[in-house]
Image (cartoon, rainbow, N blue to C red; front, side):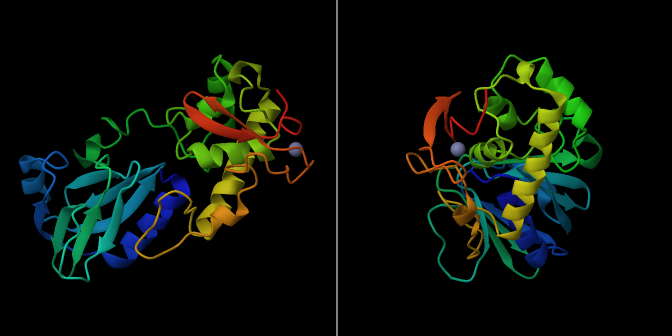
Length: 265
Ligand SMILES: [Zn+2]
């Protein structure tokens, strides 16, 4: 699933290709994704710019915000070939080009909101701040009251926005904190370390174009951060710090990779 760095890469691509364009027509090939009323409202809207918050893309339109979540496999590309792919579900006919939303799993979502309601309604109303802007003290107080493993807390978009399974493992490894350590047992110093390494990992990943293990791809752009991953997906390989073989375990249904020596509970 694309996480904050990959979504930033997609927004950069969209800003460089469709910013300033106007939606002339839309072909909704998978009807559940965009209903008739939403489609009608979208036609005639100009794309001022594309913002992001956590894992969400926000198309800033003339009168509305269109909130797009790529979920597992969502991708945007500019049509060059004549034929459409069977997984091209939404075709945006812009005044100067054709933007295609492709999604093999069909899990991606679109929500259209009046601008004043964007952050007052689902899906963004409960979304926490990103690591770049989150208040350290608030973050600490929030995790402190939860008897929940740090790994699960980092994946909770209402606690901190933009982090998914890959980067959560990397952040906890760098902060030397065990994924099973409970939020309630975390000190303020450790909470600050989590924020510090979150910014560090996400910034480096954005610069490298994201991580393209699994399926993320943004219109031909390949992300190179996979080569920099220190712990995620390295089961039974030696820890880069101490040489101990990397462990893996499921936490809340997600496989977590960690070093049992370096990361303290
Ligand atoms: Zn280690």
